[in-house]
Image (tube, rainbow, N blue to C red; front, side, top):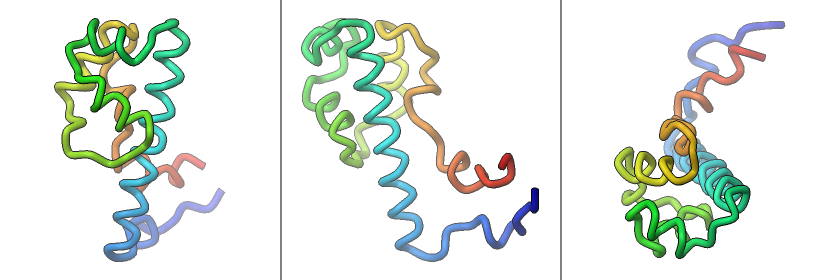
Length: 102
């Protein structure tokens, strides 16, 4: 197992940062949808139970990057889903340094 140098783990310019953001939202959206469906909730029910708008939930589940998906929303969504809020939004650090664990 060869560790990469720190310089190899950093985004390579603006496009790399945008790709990372897309990847983060793709994972977050897919996870939110799976958790919601596992609880047997519709988007409307999750919105009612969490206080987060149906529009935002729909946008996140569609893996669309949005500035409206913040820690406060992940916390509110985590309550009816029964998970820790940090599980609903993977950090950029996870992607930048995931190769260290491999």
